[in-house]
Image (cartoon, rainbow, N blue to C red):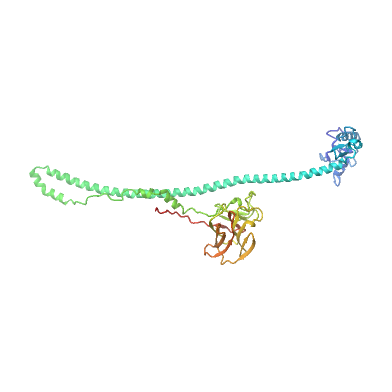
Length: 460
């Protein structure tokens, strides 16, 4: 017989002491019953460990090691320390394992006894049942950790996108300032050139007049220094020369010759800021991307939305709405009057309204929602107590105005272009209310920007 290697007393299939051990030609040993079960309904007999094919159909039982397996098996079973017998019972009163001799002793007389196999099965079931909440908690922890991992990655993505958007916006503003600076410098240089040329012309004309007058004066003074006879001979010509020189008006300094510094520097930053309002916009509602349903796509400036082609990979954070394809504003209102206009355009499936800030975000959120819905060409109003009422609307508004009068307890909708009233909810609001928008259409919806104006208050 080939040399025996490895732990032949343990069956690799049942991981227990071999019962009726058999050994294949590859020296791997198994329980006879385990191997027959393994080979059942298989065309090829092979070793379950090394996959070596075996040609023996009836394997001889290794009686030489069977006794060792029996001894090993008996050694592995705990025995009674008093009687050396197998511990076959559990004393339920003393919670102690005993043998058949112990059960007849006075110590355990009149005690409730249970066979070890029954006691083990019952306690295994108890232990299995006690593991259920632990396994449930473990699954929950794995789930939350997975969400945390996703959230950590999403934070990086959000930061990168936000940095890029900030840089792009400041680049646009910087470009405006650069162009505005250059335009103002051009105007200054043009004024400098114009007024410098005017001074040059004035100075040139005066220089010519100075030269002409200086020549006449020098010549006349020379005549005056001549002898009397010579002076009298040239007097007539000198007098005519002096009299023929026209005397123009006395030169005067002209007004406005200097650079209008006050025009260029006065309220410079205010004037630039006032002009900058043409390139900036203000939205009364900014959408919160952390609340947007995964099916929604928001615009870069967080004022527009539309349904995407598929769900985005975003964390399932507590603030995120997961049932209605919707989003809420980043700021809520708990006093005063607030209005915003929504450009719905050709969108044929949308909802506008307000949601209680404290309302749950998971599942159905209608218990805290007041809204106007447009779908399939019809308008409906819905509240926590009304699942839907038809509303008659004239025409097809392209822009809808939402007015929340928190103090007055009203939420109104109207056509922003015609002013036609659509519907007004009446309710005593007690919670902070968030602007709410939903759409399941690929046509975009956008919060209308407001005109920015700069006004200077008159000084009393």
